Amino acid sequence: MKLAIGIVVILLAIASLLAVPLIAHHEWASPDCASHIVMVTGPDGSPVECVCLDGALSTCFNPGP
Image (tube, rainbow, N blue to C red):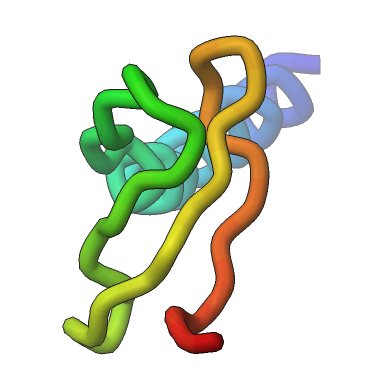
């Protein structure tokens, strides 16, 4: 029984260590959604237009006509 508990504890520790980089990667600063359309820098460094609904970022797309 002690072996099973030890294995579960080790697996939970490994899972939490793997989850930290994933959570930290998604915690990037969101733009100020004071207006309906904001320009932000995309993951590749190019500008991206984003639409805000009710003060929250809704969707993003490449700028252009």
